[in-house]
Image (cartoon, rainbow over all chains, first blue to last red; front, side, top):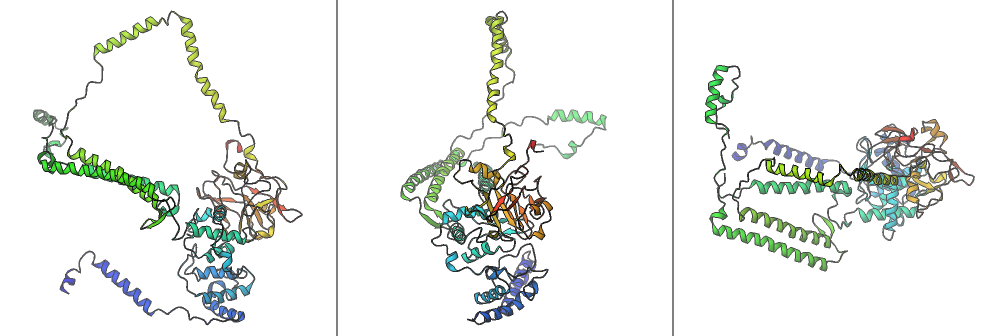
Length: 270
Length: 353
């Protein structure tokens, strides 16, 4: 105790106390915070799913999107967005949104898949829109990766970069990194055009083409993607690579040269 | 360097009587005397033969390591198949061949350099040597010789006497550069009106770049983004790249009520509008479309255009709005162009006006 008290005026003492306080607050919050929404029981009947979805909607969504999904000044109308949009927005944790801002970011998802299906059923009942894709529509295995790459470079790379690393847009908006996004969510994003992303409807980009694109993204940008040359440096292309070579490569050479010259070889150090 | 006290550096300009005696005193001490070279100091390797041996072994070790690395390079080249991928932390899934070649060649080159530096610093002679500069001007006798040689040469060439030779030589030397000037002609021919026209013509269908099928209005939903090329332009055409660079088209659909520009509305079909994809600043493909704001951003210099207001420039260095293509629907229900763009697409040029 004496040792501790002797160190209380140490310059780092305040930092240590702050870290302890933060850890304690966070820990207590996790321990006592209300657990996630009660899990609704799985309902087989569609109308029951809609009923359940309506209840979830009233609690979680209506404050911004209006009680009947008609939209308010805080959130767009959900009439006609379809089940696919709900599955994407809620499934990636974007909805419910944490705060208004330039763009609603991806975060830990709050509802489980059953609840998402109920919400989707309710929103789909408000007006017809794209329904959730089935697995054979987005399953990347067996799709044409090369054609997917061609389509990706025509339709997607302007915002998401050539290998789906993402990029900046105007006023704080951005195209997110597509690495390790669920194939289903990739498909739904193309289908529905979430937030400021334009949609790519089946008329302009047929179902098979979307599957090829999903396969391409999975091939080039996932934690299993090969990078034969070594460090990808963010996959931003020659500018980032050149910057790295000039700043770090040349910097290391200069540092070594300075180090060699600064050390004297004389027996008597002066 | 300076061993004088601070008081001796104080300016004494305003005290002439004092300055005189002071200056005399300074001159006596000669503050700018050449200090000469410092005494030579030996390195440990110059004094201790065992240390020198140690350095020798270090240098030899580095050179040997380099030899081994080169052998390793050759061995990896033979041993690793070109498509073998290994996981190496923290690099990731990397080609085994690339990694092995890079590492071994890196070690081989680095060890030669490190060995040479260590050799030079610890074992080669480190005696300081003085090499005085010589005067810039050549000695007078050399100058005299050069001038007399030149005069003699001029006299022997008889250039002043044989005027025919002199004049024809001047002519030949003056004409030679003309061949260079004539070659500049190959920079041409002038583009004439190629910059003002694209492959779009009245009646040409808008063909989807993804499917290669002509587009119908119902293929294009509000909030979607589609790219089109003119009918008849195929990817394996010889002129494809040249033509698509001017004719590239992006199509979006807005709610007709959202269109603020009167002409844009007139040239649209049920809210479907078609704009050139080529930025009017320096010609980058500009298609970073935000469907809620209807803004389109150029990735090169952040020029931003408002597609709901005649592609007006909102921000950035672009000088003109993006040219719009007048479109409508033909009797078979396909989207078609009503003519070419009415202004040149892409960056401004001198004669554009």
